[in-house]
Length: 279
Image 1 (cartoon, one colour):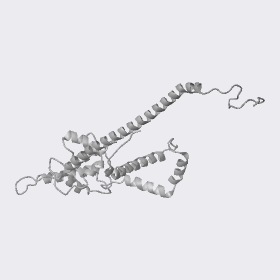
Image 2: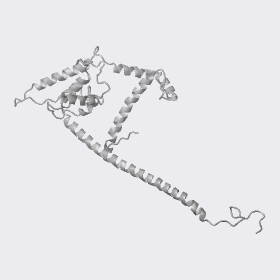
Image 3: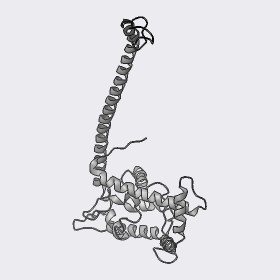
Image 4: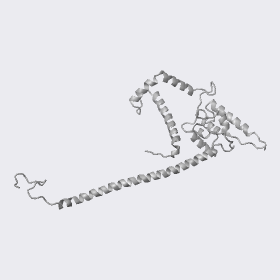
């Protein structure tokens, strides 16, 4: 069985992420189970029988229909189609890492949007992602062409332009960024360089903190392994001592028995004279 360790200061955050992940997995499991006519082996019959009447209630049917309608809603107006992405099973965090390897730097938000919302021919999968990307590129181009009093082009805050275009954080999410959104939630407080997105310093702090956590985890694991080893050695020593004692007793028992005084002739094993024997 795998065992995991983490810094106690991150306990709350880790638990929140764990519960969110479990919630998503559980929803998916229920959806798959509900769409099947037959009970799955991992679901007890009593549980399966209690679910079926609930699925037939008018309240559940109404909520299910509304959720389906919401998922298929056309964010950019009639005919635009529902929002989609091409990220697949990989998280946006993983896509961002791979994109950073190609670019040689952390990707800007609009670059990650394009990566996760286009097909192999660079065609966007829906109207919303295309219109968002085009609008961001247009604003970046306009901002790059500006000239300040010194005659130099000002730095362009890619993250802030993107956040302004998508409307910032909505329901704890940022459109197009997925799991990578946490790195852009607080952008806008200062400008970023055109060669580096604003979250680079935050990325560096995260990497440093992760490294510290790894070192601390290694230390804790070493201490735990030492303690387990001490306990194992203690148990082995106790067993070995018990075996030695048993062995010595087995060897000396015949000698001890042979050294005991013999009972008088004509007595029973318990030392009493046999019946009819005169005292």
